[in-house]
Structures are given as structure tokens and as C-alpha cells.
Image (cartoon, one colour):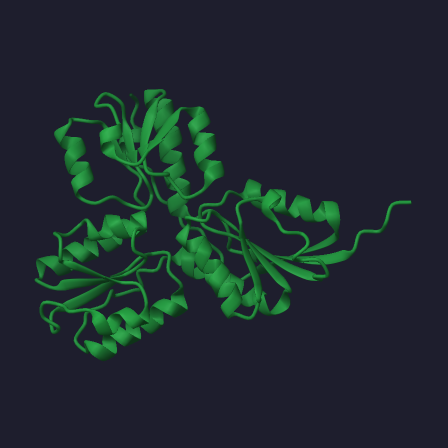
Length: 318
């Protein structure tokens, strides 16, 4: 006789998964393939998700890290994370067809940085060294014009040109709480520092973190579906831990779940980073259903209806 499956409540955080910028970026690659045929080159992973990148590769996208790996005669797409100014400049010089899939909320930070720079202010950027979004934003301005700060402890050590002429910007995918601490440290040390009118951290990052906070007290374990190089996904794991869920784990997909680690759990939370497709979330739910008698509960803290248009060049016939 088959053993009865143990009962388990699966709390599904909402919002989770795809955001408008990711949705748009993927659509841009698909539409470019329809318009110009394969291959279409993409500089950097279009979004940080292996499943998404692999499926676009199967349709004819070729992913490269730099523009010099692209031929002149095929279209190239810049990833959702944004690119330094030098990249489109080089594409123009080579007379390439290019489409910029930078998320509009990242472009907004780029414009903010340019505006402050035009007013003679030096920038402090809160973000993670080496992340493509940070490289793209810092690359909007000349060298030395942007000082990177990764943690509260870095604030004491920075040496701006003129402490009275500073502004700060942030990466869009940071932890809301950690960033608030860094901003407070900056304002304490540089009382005159100019900040963004509204937070640079985007609506999707903020909403996904808020949903995790709401679900954390009710669960024994949290699974965040996302990629190890995805900043917003890694932050969700940290937010889960900080909100009291000691076992918070990043998994790329169902096959990575450590079932032994969650043995005995009665309630498990599931969320997904902004570049993780719903199909991977469903795969995780199915994996739980195969092992447990699952009661599914959605914990919704916000509703999202943001949509971004794709660039006009893709809406026009070839």
C-alpha cells in the first residue's frame, strides 16, 4: 500500500517572477529574430536566467560578452541591465544595427546620473562591483566621476572631490533595507548630498521583497527560484533570512531542491526573482505535489500592471 503523503502548505509569494523590464527584454530578442532572422547577437545574458537564455539560444540568439565578438552585418541587442556609453558609440562607429533592451527603470538612473554630472556633482553609486547594471551606469560618466559604495562600512572611506557637491544613485535590484542604511550613512557624513526624487530601487525589486517579508513569519523554509548571478534573486534570499526564515535557499529549478534539508517542514514559501519564468515556478510546485499533500496559498502584497513598450524599430516591418 502506498504511504500517505505528508501534508504541507506551500505559500506562494505575490508578486514574484517576471517584471516588466525582463518581459520587454525577452520580447525584444524574439521580435528581432522574427524581423531579421537568425542569428541575432546579444551582448551579455539578456536577463540572468539560464532557462530563458537557453530557450532564446535555441531560437537563434548568440550570446557574447563584448561587442568585438559580433560581426558588423548582424543585429546586436544590449541586455536589460544596461551598457556603458562606449558600447552604443562603438556600434554606431561600426554601422551596426543595434537594439537597446535596457530596462527603462535602469535608463532612468542613467539619465539621473547624467543630469547630476551636468550640474557638476560627483556621483556615489550604491551597488555591487562587477554587476553589469553597475558597469553600465558607471559607464555613463567619465572615469572618476562615480564612486562605488557596496556596504555601510565603505562610506567612511570614500574621498570625494568636493564633499559639498555630491549626489547618490543606486542599482535597481538592491535590498531595500540595506540600501536605506547605506543612504543614512551617506547623509550623516555628507549632509548636503542630493538623492533621487524617488527611490532608484525599482517597483519589482521592492514588491518582491515586501512579499517575502509578509510570508517569512509563516514558513519553515523559503525557496527563491532564480539564478546565482541574479542580484534581485540573491537579495530575496537575504530578505527571507533577515525576516526570520533561517532556511532560505536559491534554486535555479526544481532539480536543485535539497529535499533532505526541508524534511519535517510543514510550511514552505516559494518566490522567484524578476528574471525567472512562471514555468520554473510551476515545475517547483509540481515537485512538491509529487512528494506532499500540498495546500497552496497565495500571499499577495501588491498587484503589478506595469508594461513597457518595445523599441519602435521592432514594431516597424523589415
